[in-house]
Image 1 (tube, rainbow, N blue to C red):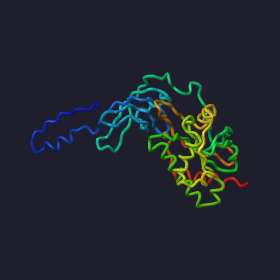
Image 2: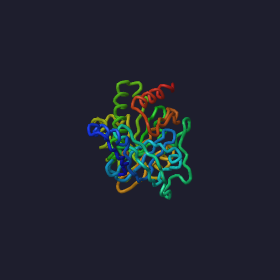
Image 3: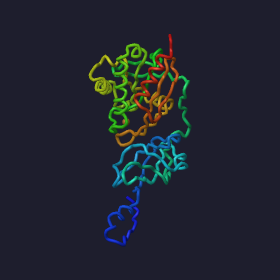
Image 4: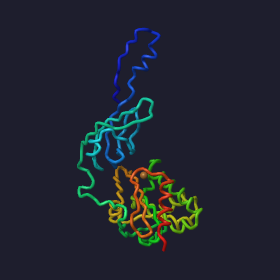
Length: 288
Ligand SMILES: [Cu+2]
């Protein structure tokens, strides 16, 4: 931890307390060392899997605001970086600056991948669901499909568990509108196929379906072959880095229209209401 030490020598004893607090620096500063999982220049944020930051927080993967525009623009997923964490003393805000790339050899996308844009067709890959049943994305044609990626062992409450919790709320909301329920589908794809076998996914899915297996007809929990997973992650902009029995990853949600093209993708920030509105709108937009 690096803290600025300001020296205050109040003239009068009565002023000591007030002066001491007035002279305290407004911010505290820490050193961060970690690996870039995802950077978003438009939103000025970077998701970093970082080491322990003594005095601030343990090692974890989380998003940071960045106040170092050129540093942010230079970052790519996989880069190892150093930065300064600036934290307001009242804890109300924090951000990174002084970004420095220390190792770019693990940089992803040396051959830049193509992330699908709105209107582009989704590749028709084979998936295997929680019942061990093979299916293709094209089998979901005619329905608006909300897709996201998780791994069931994810320990970070604000990542996969949040995605699945919010998807379960969307699932329950849609169930109250039979028309929309019939024209929509939810798809959660694991990027940890070695561990997330169909039976593991089934157990995971049941927890988010409140033990109602009939929900699987509206919400599949699927996995795919490693090659197809690679293609899917490129298409949907997903980034995942396997490390020490954990996977650092971005959070991606993609909405596919009933005709099999991308309607919209949310790489980072979204709300449940926004997703649900977009899904209902896409479902209703297509009149067979
Ligand atoms: Cu996760």
